[in-house]
Image (cartoon, rainbow, N blue to C red; front, side):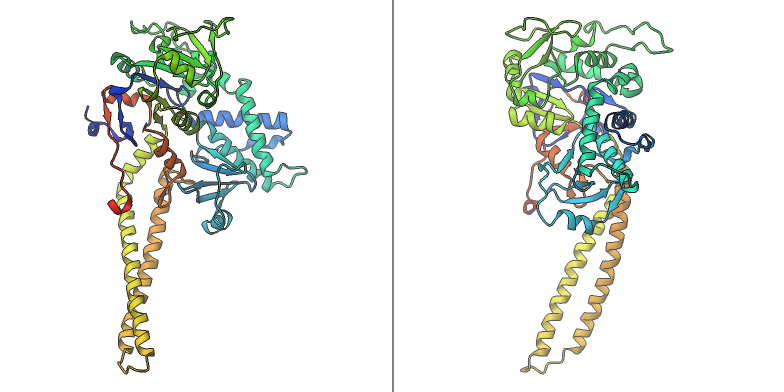
Length: 494
């Protein structure tokens, strides 16, 4: 299939040239990469589990258990200002555009006063970066709880910073004690999207001679259940036949798709530290003696590090393509710690592209308004320069040239241009707001903030060689595909 024949929502988009014919080994993260989740449902599950922990472990009032969940309250690329109870969306330079205190919008002028007086360093402990789908419930919770405590004058209520710390602690606890993953594991069909094209995609890679590996932070028991659900045929569910679907003959189970399987990898430390690999038995228990030498197909490994991985897998550098969803844990660290090529899965891309195509006429109109504003600004500047020149002539005692009529004509033209400019700005703001609402009523598109690329979009450009909405989109392309990136140009070259 030719790239232009592929639906835009299913295309692979290129930041840097990537030649698949040079790739010997393709690795995959599991959560939000191979396994795409029903995002609103798993976010609400995470929020409810965390609220329960906040009440039982931190003494928060039981009334918070009734807080409503709104999935539109958070997108990737937001920043939590834990000192002030604010959430904002920065552009590529770190300057906030949209901002909220709790659930209330902060107008742009106030946001400028708060954050543009000095450089906003997002690495400062004051800020927390929401860069993964996994973290979206934390942002929703923070906004809801800041709003709740602002509206209720309670004795001993926590500070904004403490609220954030408590959320992080309790959501981690909910994941560690199984409050979330136990529910997901028992109801996989309700939480995990089963992509029938995934097996075909993995097989296509293998058929071209590439080796595949799984590198996930999830533990073995959860990984096995999810991967079995994705690749082993219909799972046993209430009300359905207990007879599994027949397996494709080359793949008796999901494990046969992969040459190396690493669980509990501990990314990003996998890329930065030197933890040893641990061999696991079929039940996920550590073996007494760790193996050495090349990885053995069919074995399960835990932990490890990139240096040992490359030696034992006998694949390194730009011969490896890693596919993940997390900017820091998958993309940034792998790029900074190795020459691995990167492909980022952005589940939201389907919505972003579909919305973009649906409102294309409005976007074209916005472009025309941008051009009109530039034109009106230019015309107004020319008239003001001309008026100042006439004023100098009039004020010069050595000349008696009459300029009053010319000044009056220019002043009338300036007033008209100012009216036109005000009207165009109102139209521009109204249309821009309508376009943003089409993507998300609170935050707009995730890849843009106002006139600029968003900070999140900038990071996708910087650290992902290619990006797409799901792993199975690779099936539309040859496993020998040469993904050619656009020629980068500076403004004076365009």
